[in-house]
Image (cartoon, rainbow, N blue to C red; front, side, top):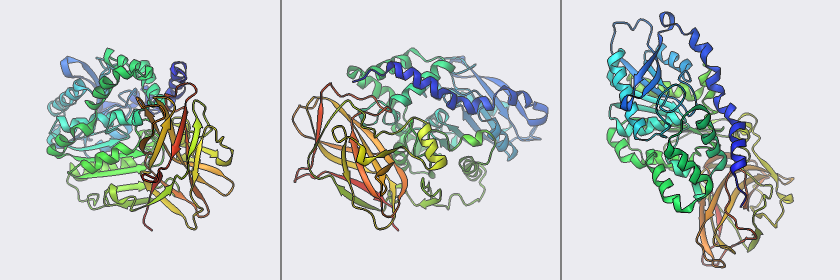
Amino acid sequence: MGHPRKALRMTATSVVSATLIAGTTLGPATAAQASPSTTGVRFVDIAGDGGTVLKANVVTPSGAAGTHGYPLIVLPTSWGLPQVEYLAQAQKLADSGYVVVSYNVRGFWQSGGEIEVAGPPDMADVSKVIDWSLANTPADAGKIGMAGMSYGAGISLLAAAYDPRIKAVAALSGWADLIESIYSGRTQHVQAAALLDGVGTLTGRPSAELQQVFKDFFASDLSREPEIISWGKKRSPGAYVDQINANGAAIMMANTWGDTIFPPNEYAKFYEQLTGPKRLEFRPGDHATAEVTGLLGLPNDVWTDTGRWFDHYLKGEDNGIDREQPVQLKSRSTGDYEGYPNWKSVGATTERIALAGTTTISTNVDSGANGGVIFLSSILDQLAQLPPAASTPLLPRRWAAIWQSERYGSAQQVRGTVTLHTTVTGTKESGTLVAYLYDVGPLGLGKLVSNAPYTFHGQTPGKPFGVDLELFSTAYDVPAGHRLALVVDTVDPLYIEHNPSGAQLTFSSPGHDPSYVSVPLRKQ
C-alpha cells in the first residue's frame, strides 16, 4: 500500500484556494463598505460556551430600530471561511424582513477556542448565539431558523436536535453521517480528509482530539477504528434523528451529485427518516459548488429555495413550497428539474446486469479507471458535462475487471443509488476494491456515472466472501445505443487502498448467489 502522507499536503494546498475563494471574494473590502448607518450591518463579539468569543455580524431590516417581531436566521460559517461568508445572502434576507446573525464558528479565524468539529461546545455555542440575538436584536423568539453551507450545514442540522427553539433549517452541502461520508466502505476518502485537515490547519486551531483523529485516520490504524467511528457518530445528525423529529423543525437539505467530501447517499437515507416538514434537493456539481454563486449575491436556485423555505415556515407565507414535490433532482445530463414524492420513488424500476464468469485481477496498480480529482472533475461535469472518462477497451484486464450490458435501444435514465453484489476471494486477509459504473459509447469511451470504494480486513485468504456495495447516488441519462459497464480495480487517488504487495482478487458468480449490478431507472 502506498503511503499517502506526502500526497496529502500537496492535495490540501492545491485545493484550499478553491475552498477559500468565496470567502476572500466577500472579504475585508466588502466588510468595509458595509456601514451600519446605511445597511444595518454591525460586527459584534458574542460570548459562546465557556465565554469563548465568537466573531459575528448582524444584519437587520431597514427601519428595524425600536421594532420587534422579526424572524431570526442564524448562519454558522463553513469550514475555514470568515464571518463575512454569508454577507450577500444575509443582506438579501434582511431586505425581505429577517434579522440575520452570522458567526465564525469556534476555532476558526478570529473566533476563540479550538476546532471541535460540531461537538458539544459547538452545539452550546448555537444556543448562546440565539440567546444573544433575542436579547440584542428585534428578533422573535418563536420564529428562529438556521442555515449554512458545509460545516455550517452540519452544525445547523445537529442544532435542530439540541435546541427546540429552532423551527426551520436549511442545510446546504452538509452531512448526515460523518463517518460514512469520509470513510464509506471502510475506506478513507484521502483527498477529502486531506482538504479538511489542510484548511483547518491553515485557518484555525484544531483541537488535540481532532489532530489525533486525523493522525489515526491517515495512518490506517485499525486499533483506533472504534474510537474514530464513535467520534464521528457523536457528530452525525443521523444519530439524533429521533430528537430532531421530536423537536419538529422543518428541514430542507440540498447537496450535489458529485460531492467528494459529503456524498449524497447519507442525506437521502437521513431524509427518509425525517417525519416533519422536509425537502431534499440534489444538483450537479461538487462540494458547495451549487451554492457558491449565491455567496457573491448572484441568482442561485439553492439560496432562492432557502429563502422560500424560511418564508413559509418562519413567516407563514403561502408561497406553495409545501405543496411542491418535496424531492427535487436536477439531472446531470439535461439540467432539467424532476420532482418526486419521496426518495424511494426516484428509481421506480431497477435493471440487474449480471456479472457472469470468474475474473481475477492483480492489485496495487491504477488501471486508468478512477473517480477523478476532488472539486475539478465534478465541476467540469457540472459546467460542461465532462465527467472523468476512460476507454474501456484499453483498460488492462490484468488490473481491471470489466462487465458490460447490452446496447440500449432507448435512453436509460439512471436515478438514485446503484448497488453492487458480488463474491470476492482474496489471496490476502485485507484488500481494497473500487467499483465504477460507466456510460460507454459506440467507440468504447466510458463516461463515469458513479463509483464507490470498499475495503475488507480479517478475511481468510482463499475463502470466498460476499460484498454488497452502494455506489454514490446520481441522476444520469445513458443515450440510446450506449452500454453500461461496471469496472472494478484496486487503486484510486481519491482513496487510501489497503492491498498487500502481490495480492490478487477474484470475482465470481456462484449459482446459488449470482453476482449483479442493480441499476435504478426512472419510470418513463
